[in-house]
Amino acid sequence: MSDNGSRDNSGWHDDGIDPREPAFDPWLQPELFRGVLTRRVLAFLIDLVLLAIPIILAVVFISVFGVFTLGLGWALFWLVSPASVIWALIYYGATLGGPYSATVGMRVMDLEMRTWYGEPSYFVMGAVHAILFWVSITMLSPFVLLVGLFNGRRRLLHDIVLGTVIVNSSALGHGAEPLRSF
Image (spheres, rainbow, N blue to C red):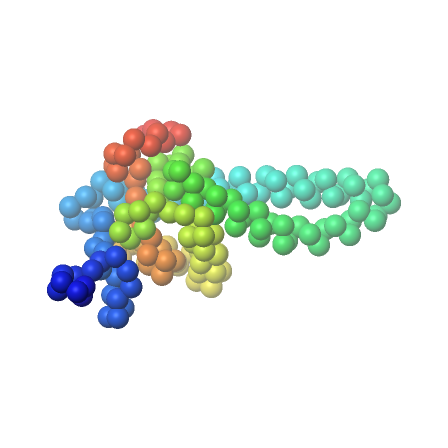
């Protein structure tokens, strides 16, 4: 409460409850969630290919470099794993935190990530979203997708933990042009 007795919604509260209401209602706006899970799987596969291309090129380069240096260049193979993780975090952080709040695969599939209360994503949220996704998929295998079948917003475990929601971009009607229309 502020000094004049009105409720102040601008900051942290002692009760620990976020005063912002959910922005997207699956019952009032079903078009936002129609086909989201299927599109997310396809978007993930597209993003996986995009993530793998630079890594494969790096492995080929190190292999060829190792041949020319009589095996000394192959010592660089230890860099592939940490570089892959860094590349993935930068990719997800930059694309999900970018102007479209979507990875390239999500843009192709006409999807967008928003916060629970409707704001666009940002770099750190995109990177943490990727980390939580990979941790959950590693521990729960594809069963993580089952969670999305039992809630109206088609949210997965890492979406629930982070307070994000994936919606159809074209249904938002904010003017962002998808790379491909359906």
